[in-house]
Length: 253
Image (cartoon, rainbow, N blue to C red; front, side):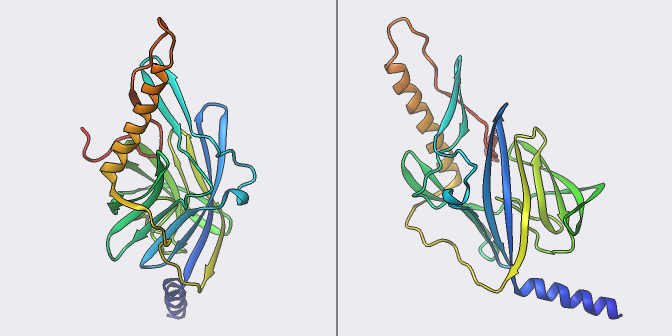
């Protein structure tokens, strides 16, 4: 009985406080070209705020350029524009059941709204220790990618980096099976400070509109490139191949 009381007190403590987790994301979309990015997650039982740390807090990163590859009739988008003027965040409101993500598309700042995706995780048999936490391995499929993660039941918040949610506990590590993307927690603390969605005056659009805007942007860039080619030069067609976190959406067959 004494142990149960201790557990209930512990869970109540977590529910009343803000959990702050620092994550590092390793990306290797093009073999041999690694990018390291640092993020911070604020989480309680009502909302989550996941944000990119300022570029001056990411001294090892090379995030200045928007990068794409062109091969035959395809444009593979491999890195979005990261700039010092846009506040990049993913904000989850559990009461309103929506996610708001910021982005800069063709030099216009947007906040993109969508419903909270209901990720279905499968708990696997493997366990491992991450810092002082015992973690269990889980896996899920989300928008065209297969991901696995490691969560701890010792921190009951069902959250992780980016849009990852609905796990049986706090996700301390997430990676896609191709190893192009790998998040891992580097610091965890509890805080009493409240937090809200960033107060930004960005244009509000839905997810489907944002996907179309991004593809239109890269098609336009391809058309501009083709218009500058000399006569007889090979022309790159405007077929966009996604290589980000999300490569196939719910409304696509």
